[in-house]
Image (cartoon, rainbow, N blue to C red):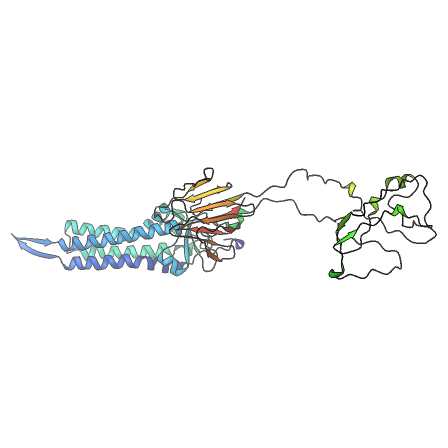
Length: 449
């Protein structure tokens, strides 16, 4: 598997160890019950014929077969829904379908049928021995078939050693289209969104962020050459409200030429105030009265500033490109709104849903008063591990609020960093994309698309 997917195929040794652990209970039950049944067979001679009493074999053999089949169905159902078996849990591996989700009952049954084909043939031969009463030859018929079936099962389990694609699939995996992953050495795809994981829920490409210079924030007043910089003031010395300075036209220093017919800007009200600033306020050059420019004063030079070449010899600070706030230009391609990521969930059975504003999740969810317009998401649960209305989901832009509706088996959230936290019933919990929500024996992955 690709390195960035963090998936590790299960080695043949771990596969074999898990299979042996899974087989032992069934094999042990069959051996014990059939041994007791064969030991209880009695034979009598009647009219020159040998009559076998096989009632004990039928009784104990039937019990053994029934217990073994029940155990196999339980293991099959567990692996079909979660990829786990007792052996898989102990060896740290998981079975999955070709997309990295729970394999399903059909795929697990087909894998088991191919693996145990030889054992099933031996069991069938034992049944024929009982039916046709070939007890004298039973050892020579059933024994070799059991040995051949065991060898075949071992070869199938470790057949991924001969897979040229990095030991990814065995013979049974190829037929059933399944995969087996080592979750101790890598990521568990079933619990983290499949083979692609979070990559399959990557948000849409957004326009690149461009830094914009603010014409006001952080701007400092230009100083005349040689003038000392103002000493910084402590926060306690800064007045909460600084009065707006009087308009420069109210004073006419002798150093400036008189501008005839230049209308003076109106003086602000003494009560006018502005928010406190951490640096002395200086009116930007773009706020100069427009009539001054028409009467010969160069645009961008305030009354009170000395133009270049004047008798005072002061230089004028260069005008900044952001000073003219009225000349903001719209860049091409920014006329429409940026695309918004849509929240989606993917259930552990592979189904994918786009979330509405309000969603109810459960075995057969029903809204309470005021929830008639909620999206109802029914989840199959043959084991009845989830409640009728288990969860309430409320989308909130960057994530969802998940509330456990007083469910019987509870709920939990696993964050992208692997931290699992149980949900408090009735208390909304905020869940971000990349997290996995567990409810009963089912899970779903939250992503963006």
